[in-house]
Length: 224
Image (tube, rainbow, N blue to C red; front, side, top):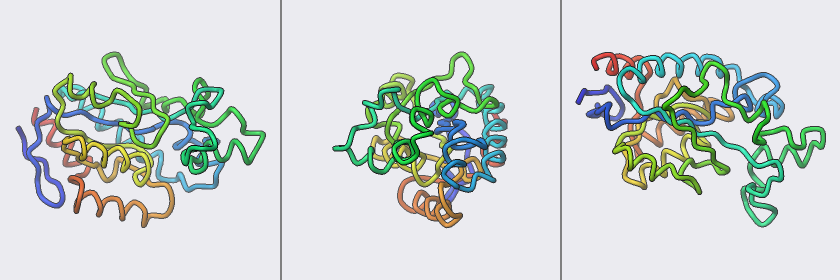
């Protein structure tokens, strides 16, 4: 056990029982020409976040952390999008854009497309676990909970995009499933203005878990 500096207070951190969760670091959300960029969202911070996650990965794997990727997307027929009777169909950005802009049909977050793929510098390695999902939360309709429990994981280190959407949704569900969620503030990026990032960080440290920095996390991992 090591003590990880965090807000609102330090947390006892047990690397063998922890997993690094990388949420939706896909071309759609990070790269020029991806879904966020096509929707006019600010992705100027995405490269920095990818680099920070890379640095965490390079320390987490030797320290023995399980690495779990979450990857949102849909079948080419979009049947797992929920259809018009589902709120997901009406609110999820890829589904909305593909209906509103016919030239994008079949190109956004669809399995097998460039948009769906995890960014090159963060490609999973042998031994990593990739869990596809079709909803914001990585626990919704996936085997994530059983995978974590089978591996004896109790603490989850959250990174990725978008802080206020898929990261926060999964983190909240982790809290409800009795995991200990730790959010890395500079290894996440919000969808929308900076106030969205600040709101999620405050929400997490007040109600749902702990917030740390990549610098403090990497220093803790190096103690291993």
